[in-house]
Structure formats: C-alpha cells, structure tokens
Length: 238
Image (tube, rainbow, N blue to C red; front, top):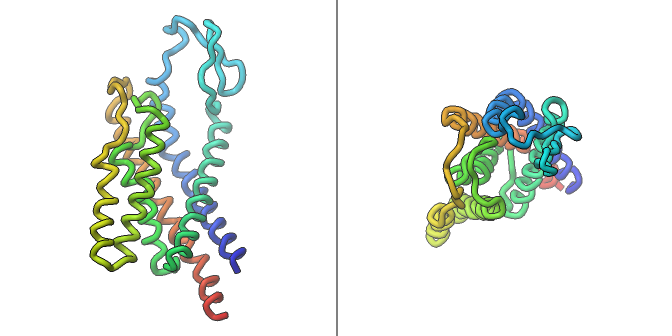
C-alpha cells in the first residue's frame, strides 16, 4: 500500500513537472534569453573576448573561464526539463509525506488547497524577500539567500499547520510569529542595486514566474487528490 502511495505521488509530481516545463519554455525562457542580452557584453566590446570551447563553456583571452551553463536550444530545454521533473517529483513526495505525518489526507475535495498552501510557502512567501530574478540582476550572497529561503519555507509551512490543523489559541499566536519572523528579520540584500536589465522586463518575468508556479502547484494538488484518494479509501477499508 505504501509503495502504491509513493508511486502515485511521484506520478502526480512528474506530470505537474511536465506542465511546469511547458510553461517555462512558453513564457519564462524567452524572458531569460532577453535578459541575457543585458547580462553579457558582446565580444566586440569586450577587452578580453571569450570563445566557446565546449557547449556552455567559454574560454577568455586572459586565460579565465566563465561559469558553465547549458547551451541555448535543446540542451537548455533538456536541463530545464530535468529540473522541472525533479522539482515536481520532490515537492509532490513532500506534500504526500506531510499529509501522512499530520494525518490530514489529500483528497479530491482538498487537493487544490494543498497545492495553494505549497505555492504560498515555497513561492509567494519567499518572493516578498527574494522575488524571481533574471540573469544580470544584482543579488546577495548565494548561501545567505538559500538559508533565508529554506528557513522561510519551513516557517511558513509551520504557520499554515498552526492555522489549519491546530485549534489552540497558542497555536494561532505561534502561527502569526512564524509567518512574520522571516520578513521581520529580513532577506539578504544585494550589495548594490545597479542593473542594465529593464525594470519592465524584470517585472514581467516575476509576474509570469509566480503565475507559472501557481499553475504548477494547483495541478500538483489536484493530481495528488485524484490519484491518492482511491489508495487512501482502500487502505481505510482494510
């Protein structure tokens, strides 16, 4: 029974990851490509021109090498697809595991609510401090951003649990504290704010990224509810 439960969660995750990939290729990848024009100077204007030595890696005249990245085209779509499928499978497994841990099943009726809660914790709450960023935009230290991002997700998820599952007054108060704490502490800030990326392009990317994330999580929640409900009902009849 557990094996079927895990398999159903992975199927839901992979299908929602495929939806996310389609949204990224359709809406987000063109915006990223447009931003890369502002991020990378042209070889003609560069003092130390760089030449591509292998797909995604460029060697510069001064002997240095730029950071590896997938080459445009099928290679980039392939890496994006792998990342989307892994994200879908991983997040779906986490939601399914949490439902077992707190004994609140994911059903056809509440699957979309689970999906929206996932979106709120992972994307919306974190975007208040670290909004989706395009290449070339200033950013704080990567490790500091990752720590704040993960801590915000955990705090927000715990706050949702306090509000939705617990009924004690202390739980409601704790939920408020957990929800506000990461934002009162503040997210890591970039040392400078100068960028050549047009503000309209950055705003368009952030909006499209959040819409894509909303669809991704809603599809995941609905699929989890559809696929897990028969397994849960069969388990309770045993």
